[in-house]
Length: 349
Image (cartoon, rainbow, N blue to C red):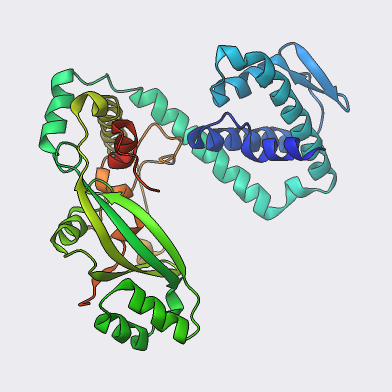
């Protein structure tokens, strides 16, 4: 098998979007599931395009891949040949896995069961809630006007970072950062103590970070340091520049429309789950696992990247600078409207 085909199996197709990659992965699991249930070969519906050790690869399978890859008409022929090879390689891998009884591996079976449950749950939600109607222009404009921080009054922060492992953020280093007057002084201290670090220049906007952090950044003098902890790493950050980066209604409209549709879909899905829960008998056999009555409701099943249900809060996908910010005493924007919009309303997707 050549490397191109291996990459294609892992990614489904270079033409796929991140959402479609997950869908394609689930389809692969579903195909494996059908093979697990019955070893006997059954003739597949649809015109056969190829045969792999007697197992047919059909037009229906190829069409499914093309649809999920979002292939344009102009790319249809080339993509069809490529995806047929992907299907052949996938079948070979599936057969090889079956020979080694990997389809009976408990972890594999558990993953298949989970994927199957997600697919069915998602299909139910999509059937029940369908797709929300496109919002009226007045609704789009209203959202635009209610959130000037995301659009008309959007600010852009240019920041410099020193990135270190979080374990190296010791009290001694914190003290040194507190007394440092610049990011370079922190770098000198790190060099002297032989602590490895990386340098980054990043651009964020008032739409990329939560309002609390945004307000804090806007109030900071240029060059002031602050510390951000994010998982296994910590960052010393200073704001190099703050400038206006407005996005007009014409440019923002399409993504606001999509956001409003996604939000409506989420509301419908939550309502459907509440209906199902109200009519179901749910008993917690382990009382310690009972949810807190004050806790927020769980997300609808299947609410991953490929779901019809999307996050309704623009601040929910905030940039890394949103995490655990501590103020210390001490992808660059092009400026084009489209690029600004992609960052500025990333949370609306």
